[in-house]
Amino acid sequence: MYGYRKVSDDLRELGEQCGINRVHRLMRSAGIGSQTGYAKRKYKRGGAPSLVAPNHLQRQFDVAEPNCIWVTDITYIRTHEGWLYLAVVLDLFSRQVVGWSISSRIDRELA
Image (cartoon, rainbow, N blue to C red; front, side, top):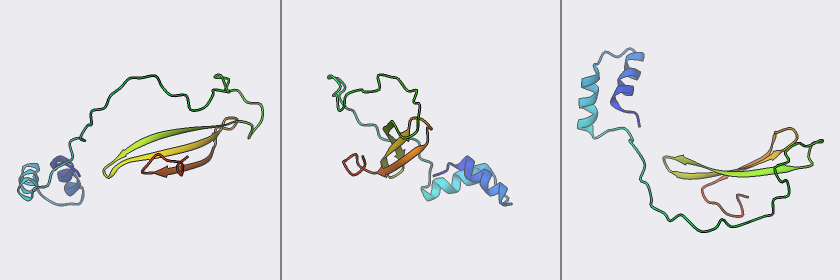
């Protein structure tokens, strides 16, 4: 949700005549406000990282022909509804996306 400054700017762009203080007062009286942050969870760090698969590339990313080596990565995206996880498969030769999947959970269906 926008704050009163951005709402005021948007109203001015639409041709409405209202001051920033009035927008602030009306939004406050209606209980409307901007989202200022997210709740942060505490979690434990530590321990040795688990090895899921051996590293066959050994950081040799130069490939001579297409579709020989595909690489993948999973990243997470914060949204207002929660976290989304994006898995992408790239062809290392052309750096083109071969496939992708998005899910609200990290599970076998995502990978």
